[in-house]
Amino acid sequence: MNAQFSSKDRSGMAVVAAIAGLLSFTVLPFMIARAMTAVLEGAAVKIPTAGNPLIATAPRIVIAFFPVWGGLSIAAGIALLLVAWAIYKGEAWARPTAIGLLAIPSITGAYYSGPVMYFGKSALPIFILIALLGLVPYFTLLLWGKASAGGKTAKFFVFLMLGVTAAWSFSNGGSSLRMFWARPEYYPLDASNTGFIMGVPVIWTGVLATIFSIPFLAAGKRAGWRLGLVGVGIIFMGNLMLFVTHTGTKEFMIGIIMATVSLALLAIPSIGKKLVEDPT
Image 1 (tube, rainbow, N blue to C red):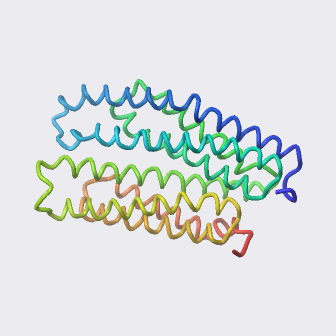
Image 2 (image 1 turned 120 degrees about the vertical axis):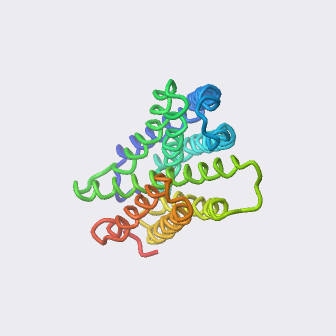
């Protein structure tokens, strides 16, 4: 980091990381609790009148996964405080690690968007704040420093698509569980429900791999680029498995399209491969 950034740059990035970390475990928990309450209250009103049995189990998904992503964001915030000091000291691993940590609240906000907009529109401003709390410092650290406009644009879209694809696909996994749990009985399994229970582990494995690739790719490591390709490729297959058995569900097709775009960005030499500075 010393070779790329001046002392002033390191101080600025450290402040950004520290503020984001502090907000993530002081303000963010209250916003998450408020958003979850709004979604559950909205679901209690909407589900009985909707006449759609497939959304009856939505509160289970909200109660299960809103706290998980919220907890991960809080943990990332605590870690960011420690990483901020390492950024200030000029340790090379610190900035990419901070970018990886900031991806978590960014993805959290994106994941919350679906339930909030469907059940709890009153919490829409809170959802936007949650997303911005991660996205603003995420892209600030990612794009910090001198680089060509084309290089920064390419980096912006690659890292944007990795996060958006991961968030959308995790949501698709949650929606699949919601629809599977809405069955009166879990057996015998037809093609539809087999697609759900086989597709969800695949798609979530891809999400994990994609998230883990972000800090390594931010560090310019070829391993990060390869892991990103693998993760997004797995996401593509998971969405494809879900779509083939549920061709009427447009969210799965959108997931396929997102994964395809992400793969293309990573594979194009002038975009994805240009992010790789280290042969390891």
